[in-house]
Length: 79
Image (cartoon, rainbow, N blue to C red; front, top):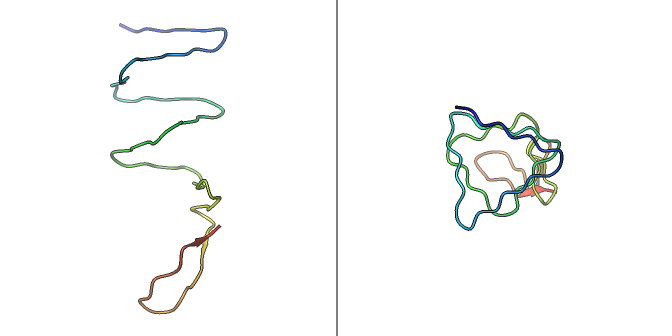
């Protein structure tokens, strides 16, 4: 059976221990989603737009310092 909850304001859930959701698909629709704390992803993570670090480094648009030809490694990304 299904459970549907509708609230006219904020909803908060507080657990004294772990909280788990087990489902074939979990979908969150929000203007902004914030995760406070470390996060572990086991499996494939797909970002359908750019990913930007807390230091402002864009996965799509970043450049590297110290680029050389051949088998050398580049420097770190430039913020």
